[in-house]
Length: 301
Image (cartoon, rainbow, N blue to C red):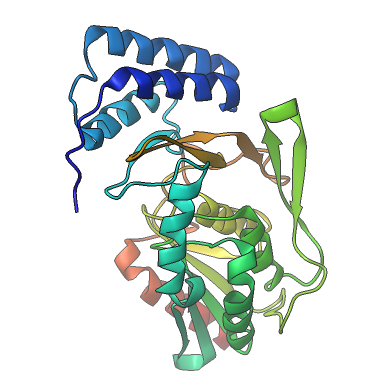
């Protein structure tokens, strides 16, 4: 169902401006964006009267200065709760219930190569720990492992650390988040213990990527790549490295605003804007066959 809700744009823009100033991880850019949105409002650019079209126009303006793909105004066809993050959580729960908890495919390919698809996202760890542990434990018996992130649109950084723990042998620093609030930092490490069995740190590991791979899924690929633990095969990813929160600014509109930035301990950088660059570039549609061939060749050696 597509809504045709008519709305005055000023209250929506005013609330987005307030959220930008209070929460966006880059304060100077927040001031510039606030000015841009206010100018566009005065010019009549947002007088479309339709929530879906307003979301498209505002998102284009929000991303026009620094290309931050997490910074957006999202349209929801069905009304959402005014509680912070409720729109995102409702959609996630539906996807979780229809995707076996985010691990819809575990398969043994020829030559003892395990394939694990993680999609459509990395769900909150309190939901996903049990199904992911079961899938990762099953895949741990493979002689090599291919993790398919081609349709994964992101999710929970804690779940990234949980998944990374299975192909690592010891506790490892994965990432550091620098938060806007209080200018504090928070390190992410793999777990010293995991439920089930680890794949371990020595067997061949490949990660499939596409231009749809986004956000926390990019972190999973990037963390393992920077540690030298995985070979990324496929296409450059979308390039969203800033964790964000969502606020409902209208019954059909949710503003998502990055509140932190990621810094990798190996590269001292992140994948924002550039995406994760594959070690073996190829079309996403060909990446599974390519990774499987690489795994078989590695095992033959």
